[in-house]
Length: 148
Image (cartoon, rainbow, N blue to C red):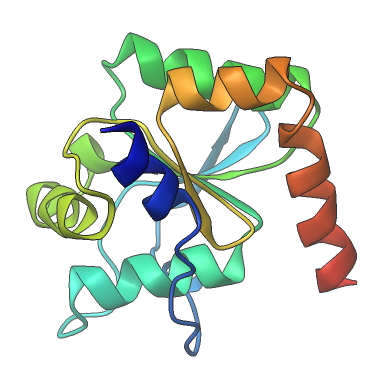
């Protein structure tokens, strides 16, 4: 399991056009993060929309509103004063299809699924471990420096 997770953590997603961030309407702000509540571009596959979202945002959390681990992960980024794109799968009409696509991409169906700088870093526990090791913030800063 650890080997698979390590291999996935190094996997970069394909970069493509405009992102789910711009395709999803009904964005709201909570905890300083960009929230998505409805599916955008009809006809685009969940996989391609996920890839676009991850490509266009430094930090993306695929979450569910009722998940305590998701809340913990979102709070971690809030406490670090890092803006992130949060996609609440239980608020999307086709959220289960997005979760299926995330399973194919990351090897697990659980939430949160967290991406930093285009790379899947794991769930809440993995993200907290990176933070405790002093590795999370440098990954985030790397992305923001690239985008400038």
